[in-house]
Length: 540
Ligand code: NA7
View 1 (cartoon, rainbow, N blue to C red):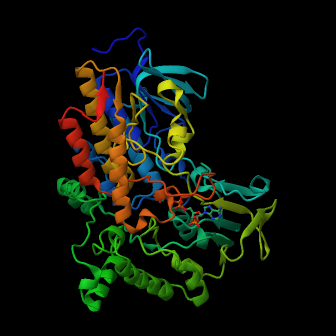
View 2 (view 1 turned 180 degrees about the vertical axis):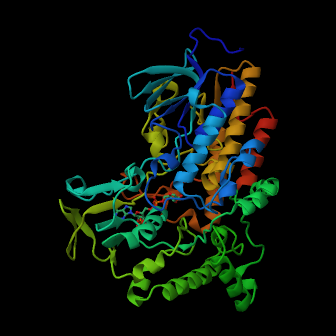
View 3 (view 1 turned 135 degrees about the vertical axis):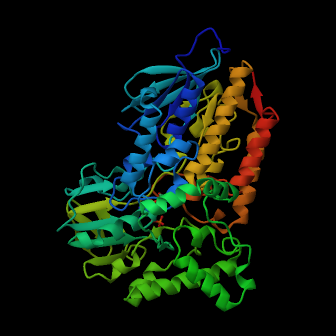
């Protein structure tokens, strides 16, 4: 070991979080043979796939593109059963990977990191845990998730309700009995849409409280047979090569044509094909200008609005479900399975709370400006304090006691989204503005973790005990992040991509949380940094 100091830290690396990202980082640290540990607040691995136990939870990435790509053995052994795997299957997959590589022994469950204080003298982090222990580590790596701090609405009385109520992220472990129950759902983002479609035919009555409708598109899920899985397996290298070449790390790539350059007939046929195809193709595999040009976007929005009108029988309800304040794809597109048909059911009611706002939650239900509703169960699908929320939860203090929360008060800034000036030896693996937050997550984090691991190797080989992103590196990255955000239509739209959440006290204004320049461009930036010996970092 090249690293030495007056006080030897207990660990060379602490990873916070044992989800998709933390598991992969743990594997690397194990291979490096470093004294390392992973601190996880849940009582098992999985992160997102551990917590979100609401019915209908599944990913919108093609299953075969969501698994890790690094291990031929894993690719050989694991069979996905659906095009878009459900939460329990993904949780099982992550548990299988952890067992296979014997990673559990690196992990400590059931405790949260509450604080991390940089000790300049000793060049180490002092990490406080919820069980009052204090650990020390040379490097601190955050794998704390993008959407891991759920937010409840700030309506009066949320805690007064006497029936069962929960945020979807905290859905009970034991399956909830929805049969015969009067159920309310607040929120119609990607989560709400999955949940609503799954339970509508199982409940006595379902009342959906919608503030702003989203443009949803069919997921077109299907089972994968063993024969199909064999065929997928034979194409894995081709699949991952394709993912590497696209902006979002998916198999979907933008069509090189412009929407308005082709004839209306050709445009229509292409959109019909996308509407009937699996996954995000309709969002990120569309004509190249649909997400950048208002006129092209307006045509696409008209097409999807027509689909909604065709699928929802009551024209007044259909109009309420069609967004009027933003264009298709400028916010996250919820992927759905028979979502719109739910509103044709007699037991389902849509309450437009932009017209009749919720006034309060009572012991027995919800009061809007129009009426009182009684419920047995209230489900909050009200989203997250996205990306920075999980950082804000930990009292992270860098050089001279500066708090990360204060530094990021008006919006986060970080070199490549991976390191922060003033916070040495902290690597924010899927931090704000990193390449992984806008991509098919495992594809993005494999690259981020590989890059950070190379940086740790470099530090080890060169006896570096303190590494810090230079201020001008993070400022230049901020410019790059803003440049790409301004080129796309969703750069200014109120959504979790820009940190919009009415349930969090925060100064209004756009926060640049994602890097929209695409995965290949991100790879070029960080790859250049590594091959030149990290000129954007101060290494001591
Ligand atoms: P989202 O996409 O942030 O959606 C949250 C939803 O909750 C959205 O419809 C919000 O309406 C609604 N919301 C939030 N606060 C309130 C209050 N106070 N009253 C009524 N409605 C409210 O979170 P999701 O969990 O659906 O999806 C997050 C990601 O998880 C998703 O992108 C996937 O990657 C997986 P609004 O639109 O703000 O008016």
